[in-house]
Length: 255
Image 1 (spheres, rainbow, N blue to C red):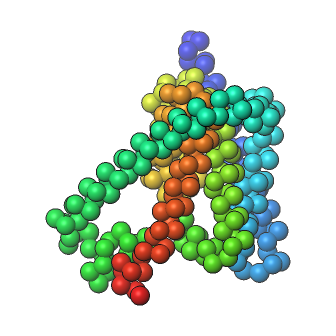
Image 2: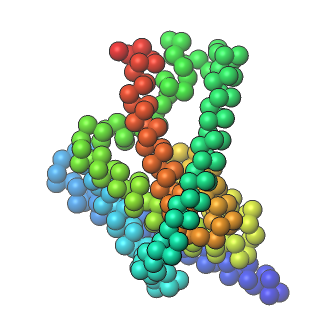
């Protein structure tokens, strides 16, 4: 009976967390939309609006975590001062593992493309992956803000600084930890990573990344390590998009 009650309480708490998170995102999006509307087309101010939206979500999340879970911003900041070098080394270790897996997957895909060229061939005989790269919402957004230095700075601050702190606080420290109490490790990783993917442009890639971050949090029990790893992963993604932006025209024969 106690186990069933505990599980029910966990489900209720999890639903409450998700509703609050959804409400904060919707409210932040509405406010930033209203704030940027007088300044021209949305795509012109997309990076700035995205950054402002992240700030508003962060403020709402910090308020929620302080009031409900007693996770104070100064406490999180103080964590990094305890053993920052070890945190960095461990985060780099997990980053290297992640990149290693990506390299293996790309190598297998490239090798497979030579055997299945007809299947993987895109329009006009171009490589399927590169011919569809600009369909990615993240890559499209990056292409729009890239010519603008302020836009790139806002984008960088959003994905490298703001997002890792906000998302690790909610998805790992709060959501995953709450789920962990009633559903076990595997199910908690699955649910939290699925929710993580829902709030990103690519649910599969983001879901896998969310599952990896949840695994690291379960293994290390360290919020600073997860925040650093998340920041490194986002920086790696930005670097890939920069490389793709410059290499794609040459590979696709557009220049």
